[in-house]
Length: 209
Image (cartoon, rainbow, N blue to C red; front, side):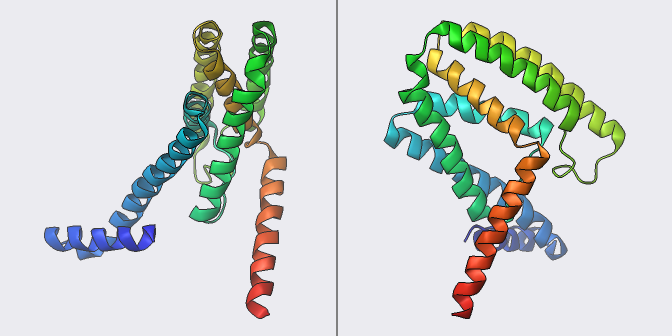
């Protein structure tokens, strides 16, 4: 549906500007924008229904910011990406809201420190994920990695200060970062690949029968 909508808008825009040869380029850009906006509407709509909006803010913002510079696995279709994103982000937000906020601050302080160390290791070894930025140069890769390290240092300072102000957001941000870091590991790609192969296999069998 998003592809059809994007192509329709792109055709009208390019027709108005008399640049029909650029329809697919415009369509692709619009599809990313519309798809991204729709995903955020779904995420925060579901979070509002479940009463976990602050937790969703902490989880999603941290995940999204670090994903730009560290990369990570991607599902092959928009629908699969949307479903996986909804499930994972909501799961983290709900767990934080009902479980982790019951723990004392010392536990969170220790976890933030451990996450920072894990982040240093994962960024050094795997970021930015080559699966995410397939055509980047070594220079581009180093710049993204340096940005990831800088963001990690900024994150740990901000998150330590958030603990006493927005406890649930600090928890959500920590788990959101851990989830994003895990998505850069080769094992995550293997897991997603197996899940997609299983889905494709079941879809193929349903069509045959």
